[in-house]
Image (cartoon, rainbow, N blue to C red; front, side, top):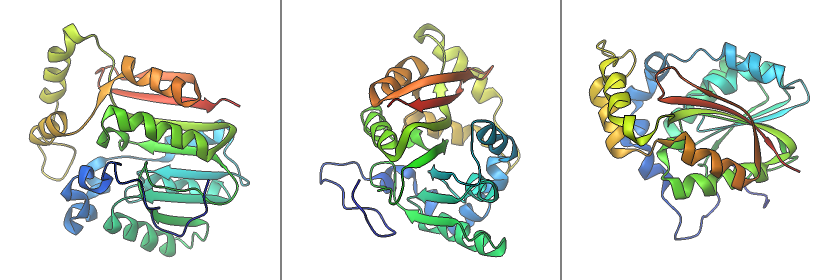
Length: 242
């Protein structure tokens, strides 16, 4: 892996523009300021899972698509080095401010994406991603997964959660209808029906039965796969094969 500075490496000209695919709201300071309240993500349980998988004071963790850094900041006291990676400068500004406020000196922020982040130093022990990979079409998901595997040491852990439908094609409309019916009707809290519809129409969630072969092809062994009762979300614990 080539050493780089604190920003994205120059990708090949045929690579996807990740910032353009991330959506303009991620550059809106008002949206970013309210992001954690809207997302409703409590990272404590995920930090516990990572610790159970071996995250300790000697570990390096890379959080890809870190957003405003909920997981990166929560995990920092438990490990040696945390790298928060995101394409959004306003979101990374929140990470830096909050790391300074909490006196977390082991948190680095890098403005880059799945296709441009270049890891420096010793290989990562853990890579984490939550609700970010769906910004990429499937072709680019596969490329991203191969790059993630290259950032990890052999037997390193990749933990992720995203919007992946675990249903056959014949049941997709019913699954989506049930998901939309549960949309939030509280402004600024959770995701509205219109936002979920925008996600389905304009973003790139896929099926578990398409995504899992990508993980294997990229060099991972799937140790655990968990599907939500709604059949809309999935979580994976993967190990990089030697």
